[in-house]
Length: 88
Image (cartoon, rainbow, N blue to C red; front, top):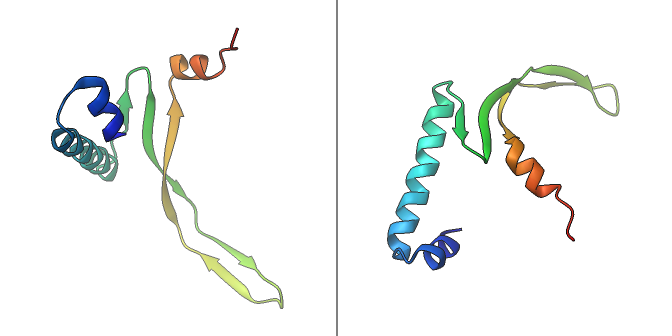
């Protein structure tokens, strides 16, 4: 991604990498603080919680799956439209 941005913008690669790193850090902190992150025309990232559960495996043993968190991404309408556009 950094190389693409560098070639498209002419910004030095070191600066582009720093911006990408800071963007990642920003998204991570926002999600950890319970705030969704929106990127216009790209989509929305939000943190979701998957409930813990108990299951049985082969042999009748009981296994407990802990509660986990995961990042959900919902693509923006414009992005979905572009992806599904038919090539002429």
